[in-house]
Length: 241
Image (cartoon, one colour):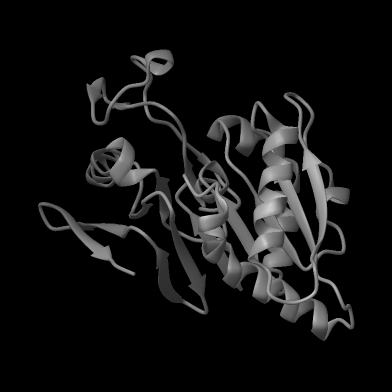
């Protein structure tokens, strides 16, 4: 099982190396299945889903070093859950960003199949919200815990409480994104200290966390922040590139 989680912000050709390990793994799986070109499902549930799905597909294509990948784009629409056909018979699955609650809700009907495919060796790539929902407990929006502000508040979310909802369940600790750039480490720390979650990993922008066979590897410009509970508080450390 291999997870490739990117903390957002990686949207240009210069960021293609962050995606290269995922594409290489999909290509290896395709070769083992007797396919010359890897098939990759690219799913976007962003408000500008068609544009974002195409852009992510282009980045994955640019990241490849072998035969061109076969990209299967799915641009989701609000209120229309993703069906099993979007992830059928593929060598890799990539889920882009958007409003995390919307991404989670529209993908929820295929969570079980996603778990089955990843357990069978299909690599999963999650970008921003796509990374957040990979966890067993998915962090939502909201910058308050018990009414106390724990991170910068967006104008549209002022006063909202942080909610934890069921994610895909590919890993047992929560995932936060845009950490250094948006001041989200404090939210992750507060969520662990309050007991909302039992631990978390925070990923900076333009940074990828690769989880494979229980090992963690970091690629890119920033850090991954590990937040764990300890007696009387929390322990914060970084996993550097």
